[in-house]
Length: 458
Ligand SMILES: Cc1cc2nc3c(=O)[nH]c(=O)nc-3n(C[C@H](O)[C@H](O)[C@H](O)COP(=O)(O)OP(=O)(O)OC[C@H]3O[C@@H](n4cnc5c(N)ncnc54)[C@H](O)[C@@H]3O)c2cc1C
Image 1 (spheres, protein in one colour):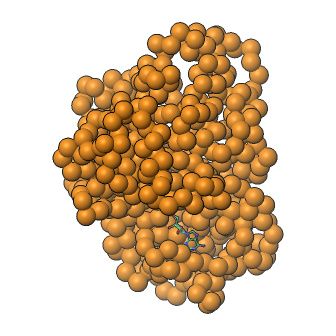
Image 2 (tube, rainbow, N blue to C red):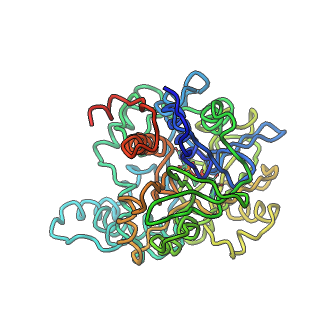
């Protein structure tokens, strides 16, 4: 059934979350307008191809066959056969997580932590890691890595940081074994909304990760406005009334923001209810994609480098999982550097950054300089939501909703959650089902929502 004369739902941001929201609203015949601040769609879900045959994402990205199927691109994806992580400690690589148990102090610390039931509830991320992993693994690996990606001391971080990592030993073992048996990279730790099992594995779209967004955007004719940041979200009597973009005010029946919540806190007008969100912090990240001659230069696909001598915390040689991302006999290593926007790394020009990474990679790849063929650098100011204890109560409260009628905040930065794309898609889809029902109940629309079986059952 067609909508008559309703005000549109306005969406901020054409990343995966915004496009998913627009797609499902349009499926339910709800009029929708999507404003994107940048000059292209896809946000963090973009791929870049260069003239030499290399493909880069915004940091290495792995998606699941289940997400590809839901979006309708599974037939355009290649299966990823291998995925594994290692940790570089004292000049040796240890497979993660189980190889680390070869180090006696780590194995002993792990056993003690599992036996020690008397500990109270951890109050910080540091306490959570020590209680869950034992002191050696926490102090030598987990805490330095957490501090490098977050830019905050682990005792200033909420124990909720651990929620995103926790997966039982038995479950991890089973998923790793399933990978071996099926010869597919079975997903482990990439989905929380839906269960992971042997039939959920990594795939990569032939056109790059951005294909997900291109397909979602394909039916949104006349809906997306690029280079149009939403400047204000207008609220009256604690209810959304519209937005301002391109200097124009537009009435809206609801607003869905996928912008970082510190931006949301600044652009909501007509109430000070969300002002406190502007203190929430994100960690910026620089990704240096090194083009190198040869392949198989790192111990495995992902190598974590917790030791202080390294200015980066993670290295990913994506062609070990996805050979098609680099020409034959060449490879690409993505170096992740967490830093603030005022820091020297953020400001450094690309050539110097490449040289800097090469100099620090020599302990891992002795002849890396001879192999180096240049780099391409990517930067994002909003890579990771930082769970500081100082705003933990507000974070928990915000997770239950914005508190403003018909204002929704979705997506990784919009929910301030460390979620991967399958969860972004699933959570957004679910919120759109709720919004559609709510608009129908408020009689903002005259359509009959197309309900999924899950919603129909309540
Ligand atoms: C280093 C790294 C590695 C990752 N690896 C994986 C992985 O392997 N697998 C996986 O599934 N996921 C991965 N992710 C997560 C994944 O990239 C994100 O979950 C997903 O892309 C988030 O989509 P989004 O739409 O929520 O946000 P975004 O992609 O950030 O989109 C938000 C959009 O809103 C726009 N915007 C902001 N403010 C405004 C405004 N005022 N008006 C209009 N538009 C606005 C922005 O320009 C942007 O385009 C990774 C993320 C990072 C940082």
